[in-house]
Image (cartoon, rainbow, N blue to C red; front, side):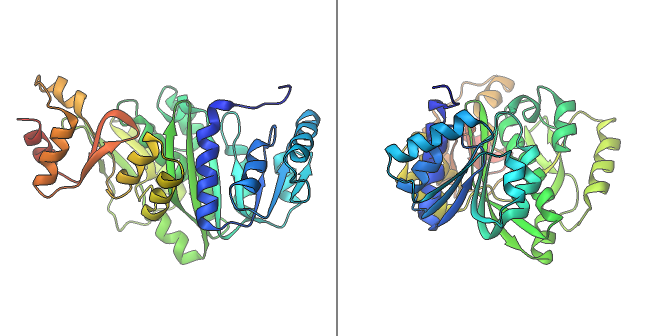
Length: 347
């Protein structure tokens, strides 16, 4: 096609449709619409009654119009040719805003957080995984105001750094954005956040922004600041800058709260029955910061690891929660202690 269309992102679109359908969203905006495939599917499958489909490219607008006509949704779709920021400036707001750029979503965060309605859903994709996952830490600090981590936990840390950045942009407008669904897939990260207006709610969000320490012995993330501490963005960044000079194990600041709404995770798994969504549905019930990489633990301690099913069963028999994680095929998310995890490995 002469207009950008990525078939690899089908799962991305499938999940967004499952979420809007489950939540009963009626009006939304696809601000970087490309061929218009997401906009049209939101109308045909996602339960929306009206979609604003926007792209800066004249070729894209032609494709959207053609595809809308082919799918008989021309009366339900408003098609515009503007920059995404201009489009957001000139509209009153939406219950659902989708940001799916090539690269960082940063240029679109201010406008979209301004225009997302109370109780609305902001969906954000980031394809600049290299900075967020620690390949380019200086770029991560410039773009996302945080120190990334480059090891087996890098993808979860990246998602949590991305969430915090979006939350901080929204906070200046007294909007609290809480994650309801996230996933790390191939070359991108995707987060869905529900908006709630109110200064007190925003303060509660910021309380869950922390710099963490990566414990290399236990391969765990540990919150380094008191949970009751409420720090401003400026003090957090200043504190981070001074500490990073003395240690390579500091990570963040990042979002330390939950990543999934359990009900939504189950609904997505039912609507989109893929292996990843099924794992996330199980993962959503375990509220931990990070997970254990079983291959890393086995290699480090020079032990032959049991089957993953055996490890999970051993942990459950002791009363702990345990499941695979979608962030890596070699990880287990559990609320068990490091000591109990090592016992389950046969140590």
